[in-house]
Length: 149
Image (cartoon, rainbow, N blue to C red):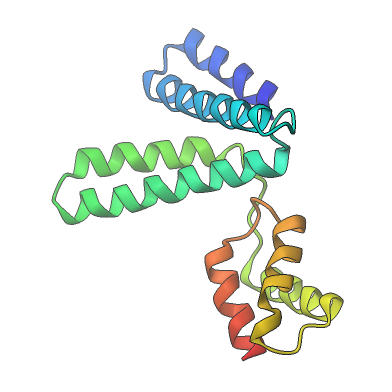
């Protein structure tokens, strides 16, 4: 993933695409920060699953900012955040559809033997290990709670 992002950054630099260059530099810096944090904790480099989680977090932050800017009447800033979201999304795997997410939740519940809301942590851990970057875990959490509750 690091190589893909660096190659995209070089291509954007050559194409003089300022928005893409600045966004990819932010992503590269965030990855470098995560790697440094991983090294200080003794685990080497951040895993691809951790990087996918990082990118998903960056997208969520930008979507929240986009909504705030749109509500405040700052259309140009909202559009800028939207463009950044689109650029970052290119590096995430395809998101699961609602039907696929429901099936994944059912499978995780069956696999972990979850019976009540108390077992929700086990189910969410199983989902996060298998579907990092492919699922909105906020939405999944609500669905798991509804199924177990």
